[in-house]
Image (cartoon, rainbow, N blue to C red; front, side, top):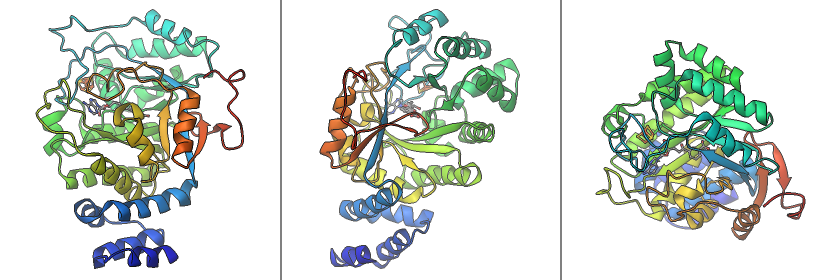
Length: 386
Ligand code: V47
Ligand code: SF4
């Protein structure tokens, strides 16, 4: 309770803010109204204190990253999400790419002998990338490198390919897992509420369908992530509604690992007229997510999207994961105007970034097993590839 009296003495807290602080310090869940109050009224120091308290209670100073690379099968897409800077509509595909299965396998083979632990596969939706294609791809990757963790596709792709193949979500997810799928990334969530989703998500799966496919995946034993695309046309209550649905699903299954807020970037898309939110708003959003999502273990700042400096700052606002090395294998954010046009960070750079923020760097695998603890180990270039 010393922190509570410190918080009180730091300024005049409103009765609502004081009641929220008491809940957090007593390890109690905050309500939707509390979260909306925080979005509308709470200042940065107050949010930092509460979020950092929770992050420290859960993880101490531990900050996780992994060694990963992405495969983006295509940047052509049948959907028309208005925030997407990446997809080339079917009709104008001059600068579009469509990799074959063999080309994707070659991208995996390029990492032979390198200590990556995860391949993250996500891209546009096209008819030729169908149910059988992904089964064959996952099997081929596992045949080549069985220990490489496959984190692939989102309910956007699964909903589309399962409908076309006329298989149920249950049957489809079971087949994908049997073929080698190890976990699902958090993409495609955007904002669940139809009032916003119908305006931005270009006809892809609904919020309910997204949640259902994650629930089925959890019930079939794989872990998944969740994202929220914020800072465009949504209001604060839409963000809280989105996080409430994630928190409720997590209460039922416990299958989510990490929540990843994704800041809307406004270059080269149909919503370019909207300004991007400030860094202050990014930090407030990370902190409120950490405070509200009490049943999520991890909050991730995805550095290729948010930028290295904000990712470093976010570690004092509830964030305890900064994704991975990436190795310049994703184009989604550089095309949307993120600072890093060729996103790649070496392991020493990630370690340095975390240490300079006063935190404790840990290399993890996708499901948070510790691979290297860089507080107790020195980084050894000859034993581990940068
Ligand atoms: O669903 C697309 C977002 C997501 C823009 O699970 C945009 O570990 C901002 O989900 N501005 C895909 N965001 C990426 C994703 C992801 C990334 C890293 C790690 C994980 C994980 C998941 O990217 C899409 C969409 O919400 N997005 N365009 C844009 N202009
Ligand atoms: Fe297609 Fe995904 Fe872009 Fe939407 S966000 S248009 S589903 S690639």
